[in-house]
View 1 (cartoon, rainbow, N blue to C red):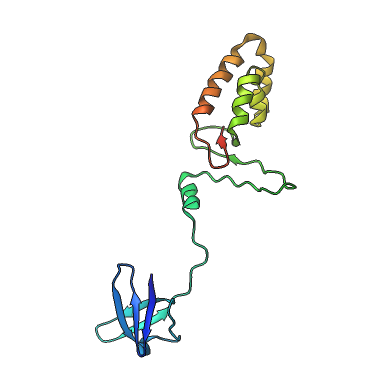
View 2 (tube, one colour):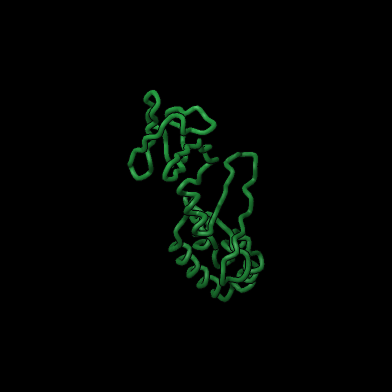
Amino acid sequence: MKKIIKIDSDIIFIGCEDGSIKEVRKMDCSNFEPAVGDFVEIFSTETRVIVTKKEPEAQQETPAQNSAAKNGINININSSSNTPIPQTYIEASGVSGPRKAVNKVAYCLLALFLGGLGGHKFYAGKIGMGFLYLIFCWTYIPSIIAFIELIIALCKPADANGMIIV
């Protein structure tokens, strides 16, 4: 993006992205009055130079938004106390069923203390699996599976809000 950095009577100095400076005449500016700080585009042929004012772009993406778009995960949480947090379901490729973002600490504590009864499954919104854990809790198999799921959850990296996808 080129920017007007200095105006000296009839000569305009334009800074380019590569660090170079172009000098153009004030009369080469088409349909606008040049001012220091204006973003411009330069079109030139062998005999003619035309400078046009470039309108500033709307809002550029922040690096965090760009990173989230590349990773495919976008968790949006409203911090207003009166507004409930929306349920965020994310469909992961290769895995059947909806995936949900949950708080990592709460999920891990529930898996540790109430995992044999399916507490972490109910918290994650997987009601059917929660009932299966509850029905078969007397076999201790759900407790073993819950402990494995605890280890898996502990290994998952949390986002900036402390959420993981389960």
